[in-house]
Length: 138
Image (cartoon, rainbow, N blue to C red; front, side):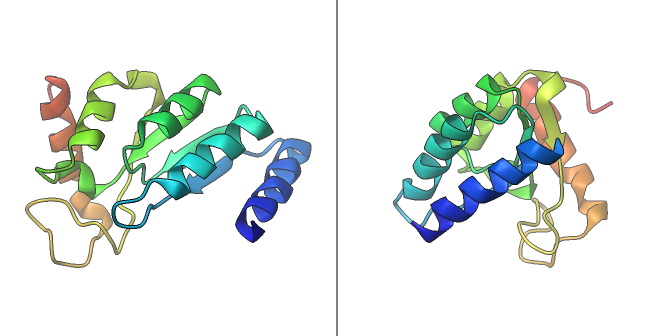
């Protein structure tokens, strides 16, 4: 509840200042409670500027963010072979809403997994995204 109230305060502040909301939502193992709450809160706020930073693949959060006009940013975990929800989201996402990031020093992409992430590795995430979407890397 403390996080929800903090979010409401930040969403109100962002709206008053004309600034975007940036959400990094990670669920615990086997749970989608954080993503479901984030979905509900962004819909409640109705803020039309935002980024789902380091998006984790939750379909309901994706639908809510896209409905509000938000961008969706993928990190190195997009390149993981078992990241099926991320793969589906990346394939379906309109190109004009798509962002790539490192989330450095975390979530290093294949083939750098297990090492601290760094900005130069975003090329691997871009290659994974292009392959998933059936598009040339360029």
